[in-house]
Image (tube, rainbow, N blue to C red; front, side):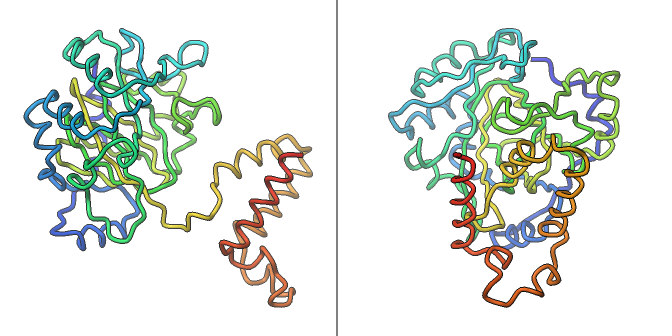
Length: 343
């Protein structure tokens, strides 16, 4: 696979590195972080990391011994696609998604490892608890009282377009190397995002090819690069990606494994902002300008600029969903929306 032009990355700011002595120090860093940071060697003592340092095959054997006997979802790209899992010329996907058991998937990787023209093979966001036994117990980060989703990402050389996620993320390289290029959330206009619904993996992605950026078609990408940060992670290194930061991810070795932990700092019963955006597209975007302006004012009043004046004239106890949300009022809103959307 041809790696992205080193010149694209050589002038970018490096992701800051921090040292943490223990779980309490990591927790303290995470609680105050508003930008990405790297902890070198955080998980180097994991058995999976040690297996990966031996060889890719040793890491695969380690995972095979702990797999559950079930089918895994795997993306298989096209030969000669240079590892990029993306759209094709017709805005379909340039890869197929199939289900197979892990020994079968790894046999394909064994057969093509080291072949630069081999199709990329990528298992993305596989739930560690649902698909493996004992893997989490032997390889985990102490993240205190955070309720985390632990996922594993396994594959050959790959390039994943820049995207963001709502949860905060601690990404730990267990085998191979990964390069992350990160952008603050406000750079979304300069990343030339694709469709909201037709996406490679559920999140809208940048249409810019980082290996060969077309600055004539995407001139504002230069501004995005001025705000970018980049890091190459070795086995055992960890990267914190704050909520909503965009990240372009490359698996640089013939075989790569990453474990990550996602968590939200808000209650699980809150709604998803992406759903609200999609609903706004359905209900507001194509209204006449005067009506759109009115709804913008209403959103600012009730959502973005809300303060005590919004409800001061309503007696306490009678403000319903205008009071701070609770699990009960959130459930009532969700039930109401489901009823309205099903009409």
